[in-house]
Length: 180
Image 1 (cartoon, rainbow, N blue to C red):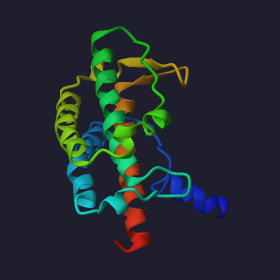
Image 2: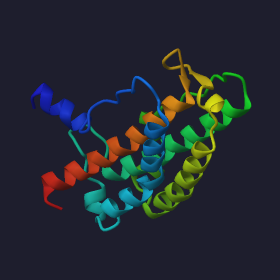
Image 3: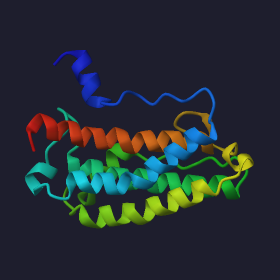
């Protein structure tokens, strides 16, 4: 497989690109993407068979089932990071090994329905808290130990909107290639 093909399979919508300015319009659009993610995901996966759910979206990649469970785990971490950032001064967040989490039994074999339900409630809460952030809140930040860098909440809104769309594209692109 060519390098370009692998890159397209890894990043079907491209890598996240931060805007020069986090405008109210940009943030509102990204919050809307976050709010609708569970519904869009469910529409793509609710009729897939176990065999289809256990298909990797690329060689050495995760299965659709793992991607779905990963989205819930990652976005739960996002929610907790927001809460820490709103209640502590520039907290150092806890890093987690998403690759190791994806190898646990709940990610490998658990049905997706409980995770889809979890995502509905979680994304309602994410969108709710994101919509309530003041300009001062949006500039609050946390420190990510993996990157050794600070991230503002306004950046996190864009990043997690991209993250959901990124993994949704893994699924939709696989479905197209397989004619599902």
